[in-house]
Amino acid sequence: METSILKTESLTFSYPAEEGKEARLVLDGVDLDIEAGSFVAVLGHNGSGKSTLAKHLNAILLPSGGKVYVSGMDTADEARLLAIRRTVGMVFQNPDNQIVANVVEEDCAFGPENLGVPPDEIRKLVDDSLKIVGMYSYREHAPHLLSGGQKQRIAIAGVLAMKPRCVVLDEPTAMLDPIGRREVLETIKALNETQGVTVVLITHHMDEAAQAHRLVVMSKGKIISDGPPKEVFQQVEALKAVGLTVPETVELLYELNREGFDLPLDALSDEDCAQALYQLLKKD
Image 1: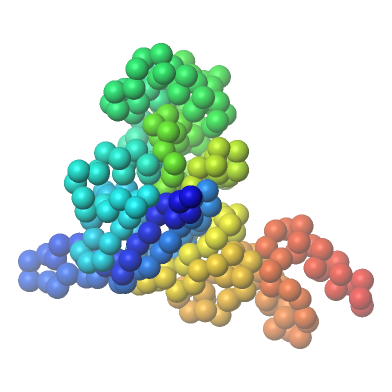
Image 2 (image 1 turned 90 degrees about the vertical axis):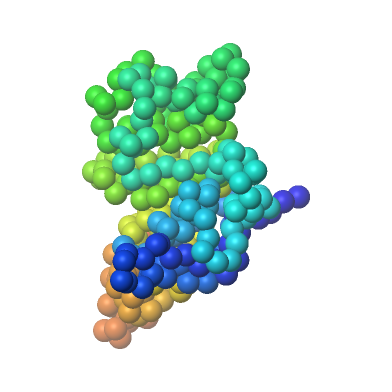
């Protein structure tokens, strides 16, 4: 039984240097093992290497050094490229760059058609994918008339129609308003929980990262922290040292502790934080 779906070993990467300049190391010895069926968030500032890492996970980029494996397949093996991209689907920041048709259901059918899936199977794949992301009732709509959050859900459905076992989302909510962000995040969570799809979410939003099962924090091309969000976000000073904040709930409890209180820093949700404060007030 395979447990690891994505694996990087001593992964390094530099973009080609401009003339007269040295190449900058963007990924610096990244070792990462992602279990099938898990929901992992990769958190980091712009320039931390997180988006470059994402592009290695389905061979958009190939390592300068080290290895990347997708279900045991080496991404540097050109003969396995199609199988790798069938296993790992990518969703990017701007849904407009991924939407290719003038009708929602035709857009979702684009991927499976290119893979040579028979037409009657495509119909079912498209319907199922649109139902998973809650956009089935919009199947005959024009994508350009939809909201940002709806477009991103269509982009996710288009990837799902190709039946990937893993979906990597590179800052999928960066261009969305709060309602769109919430819609997309709920879609991502449902994808993992109800469909068993492995999800890798690249983000710089603390509240999004807090909802994953596992949180990987990157800075300057290296992984500096890796574990459940409740554990990682307790490292307030370490995160602040690399210019990252923590969720507002943790920040509040952290500041109260600095004033001499003794509160748990693992209360990430609003409810848990309120409960911790209630217990404190009850004691007093």
